[in-house]
Amino acid sequence: MDFTQLEYKGHLFAREFSFADKMRFSFDMTDAACLTYIDAGSQKMISPNQTTTIDSYHTVLAKCGKYVTKINGGGENNMLSGIVFHLTPEIIREAFKGINTDFLHASLSTGSYKSLVDLGASRLIDSFVESMRPYFCSDAKVNERLLGLKLQELVNILTAEGNEEVLYILGAIRHKERFDFEEVIESNLYNNLSLEELAHLTNKSVSTFKRMFKKHFDTTPAAYFRIKKISRAAELLATSNLTIGEICWDSGFDSLSHFSSSFRKELSVSPREYRSNHTKLS
Image (cartoon, rainbow, N blue to C red; front, side, top):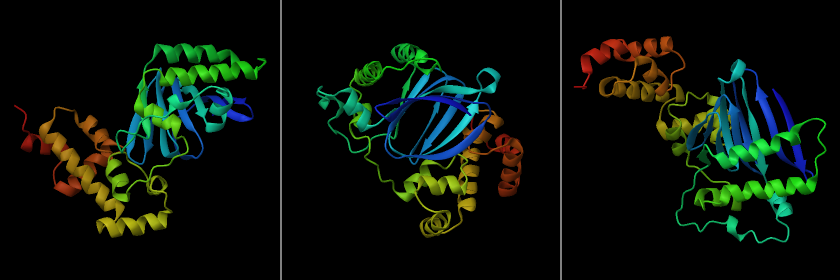
């Protein structure tokens, strides 16, 4: 992994990164909202209650919390590259010193806001990112006053459309949502997460996670997830025209061979045979 970072007033503001291979990792954003811009490749971000994929030239804003990310690569030489902008109350306050920032706070008209806001593709953000490239050059002399203006520009771009979810994230950066244990499990049934990753998203140790899972579902995580994934696959085989490969990935299996063996073990037929016997397509 390679990266170059910029600081503003002693705080991390932006990090240009590149990954040379597929990988996955868990992390905790404790004090910043992060805007991730991908310019080559693709990555999946998973929060306790939400999953989104960031493709090339797309942007996602994420609030404080626990995440699992899967780097898919796919860019030139199968690399993922982009920039993450870290937005903390401190650097926003410094950049907007003397300027009223009440516009950052949305009126909370609903009780539920997203951990991840997919901003899609945006020419304004594309242009902003390109204007930031020279700041990452090793011989560039970074002027903090100019960086402050760039930070103002970024915040104004993000808030220009009055998106309540964006305004909420920026206006309450360090506010952490509490997620119900069962909600986290149901939201991640088909993400093919490990025990460690699920425990991370529920903010529990692995041993505590196992105990709570038994209490809530009266079975083991492995058995529960297997049945849920097989049930989903069976439904898709009978009611959709997706390929068996697509159903395999959509149901959270990590390979076709694992999918086929698990399906046959549970239902005594192969996925292809099940589709032939149960198809409801006209």
